[in-house]
Image (cartoon, rainbow, N blue to C red; front, side, top):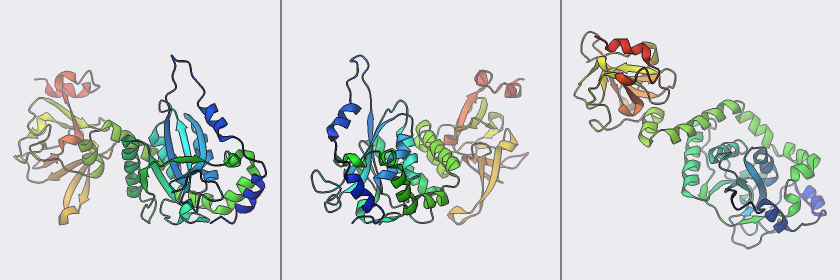
Length: 359
């Protein structure tokens, strides 16, 4: 199962000969001073032709090495001539410094190189040997990969379902030396193959807003690490916390409530009242323009959702059964809020609201 654009190039490249693979491995793992051990982690991705997957990762600061190879099959020591018959797929193994680059950044880079909706190969290369995949080495990578895939599904960038699988990393077999850094050794042949494969045309079509989308996905990853699971579910996925079992439903201390994500001021304890619902309730916003209303037709009823203006966090809903003088009840999730007590307003940058609480 050989790609028609690569076969002639590979035959020419094979004449270069095969170097001792172990030599590269030793170079990547040169001994460090005992008092300065090098901490590295490993990532493994499949994105079709491994020639095309090396350069994007090698360009990243913090990536130590990228090695093309084979993985996932049933045979030992596969070669370019028999790896597909052994059910292996083309992969790239990445050694990186986690203090300089995150696994989330590697995931983001990976998604921007492939067609994650294609279960039959990648671009001109067809068959199992060229399918995409993410292989994790630990639970942390697994969770981050699954979260990343979910974010991509929810982004709406691709109309078809995301089919790239996520599975435990199998044994990795380095490819022949002439495959390593092929884009450097054979730049003209590499460009000829890549231009003809359809990869760049596809990526340009679907990632026109690449920088914006990358920033959004990276920001979402940052939020997952900064917020609790409940805070993330409420603010980013329009979730609802349990009534009477949340942080601020019965909080009677004086102060203000700000957005848990952005810190923008939203409500005041001076407008908080006991609605009997089990959620924090307010008769009006502290800063009106920071609370934005949207029509919500979920659950087969029409309600008015409220979100924060800057962070676009889901806060809750507003109803017309509140106390005078507004007659409104802003029913808000505690998980979307952070409470700033009066005595800490000045220290936390909210001095302008301190006068509200002075007699």
